[in-house]
Image 1 (cartoon, rainbow, N blue to C red):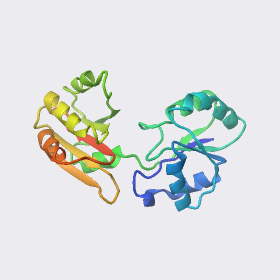
Image 2 (image 1 turned 30 degrees about the vertical axis):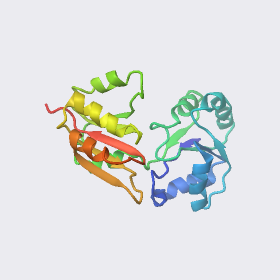
Image 3 (image 1 turned 180 degrees about the vertical axis):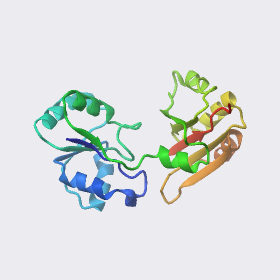
Image 4 (image 1 turned 90 degrees about the vertical axis):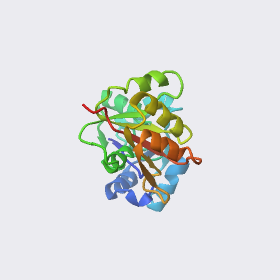
Length: 222
């Protein structure tokens, strides 16, 4: 069995009891960054062996891992934060495991965009998750494609590009379009800022932005 185990997006206290049990019982934990995951493992006294599994080695390691799963090993996949496969490594291993007839189960747990969406105050009955937009090639067209989107939009962004993104969105969607920026969710210095795209651009343009960012943007009014 391959288990996908969500890990806290910030506060380590958000780890689930079942997630801890699965990490303890697995024969191997595949970790995006073993140094990051070791902090969590030590917090919950988990001594299961770990192996690195990330975007730079997944293509050359996936076949061997699937062979071990077929042979009967139970493995758990974790990323640095949140649910594996959501803008993080995981999809390739899941796809190949499913093709091979290996059981795959994703535990429910932390995903940054869900609390950001719900606490934004914007409609959350219909939404589209966009992950990270292209950094360079294709970015302009990706933003332009959002012009007529009526669902609430969720975007992950680097703190270094946040102000640029807000400006790009304001240019395409209108400076008065309502949005919400969640920064450092669940952490000590967590911040949730709501307002128009213009207001948010001005707010975050005043000082250096740090931390993990989720941007929630209201859809076009029908």
